[in-house]
Length: 303
Image (cartoon, rainbow, N blue to C red):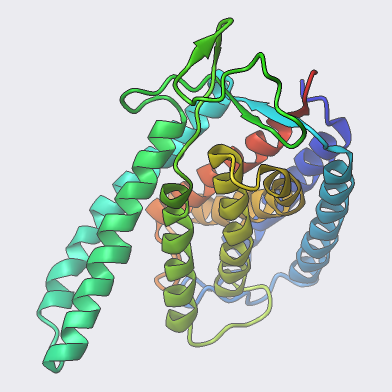
């Protein structure tokens, strides 16, 4: 079990309660045509308050945990690596399903320059960057070629000279990996593109709606991916650890509760046209589980 028990119980409890309420709301009080909450009595208000309080609680718990971290490491156990592979596979499948959008984009009746920019944006943010991000999920988990990452160590204090500094060296049975910092920023670039395109697509953002919750989730995902890149590349790892503990649990809560309800609604035949597709919901749900597992896998150096 994780050494960070307060964060573990806070995250597990908040995620379980919010997910249950979210599923109930999606099945009983959400208009499938718009994604807005219509009815449900006081339950939407209760969910909204509980979600807000839970985020504040997790931010406080993450901040206190980050202050105690001066040297940290994260061990990529089998469950954590499995979640990384699952998230990468879900992103790969989601990208494949979006290929059907390409003919519509390429045949759009626009002037030449806007059409070229639209095609470039689509190829970059709908194909290239998602597939690169999916590959990085596989690579981090050790499913890619030439990697054996059993443990990533974020040297937030003085590095231990007994440990290998070269990411592909092996010493004393310990495998370490240093990912390229610029390469690890590509998922962040892709996610910001998704955030902007989603925000522009949602023409009516209302309180406690699928659209509003999705935007908040994508906003929280950005600092998580930045912290993820810092830790795995070793560039600004100390700040990355604190950032991960601060934003990671809050993103995990949203990514578990919000897409979890969408998945339940899709299984019940209540998919919302304006919002995340079922494939996208599965990816973000698995990303939330991965973020939670990554935060809880952090431990102080020497422990």
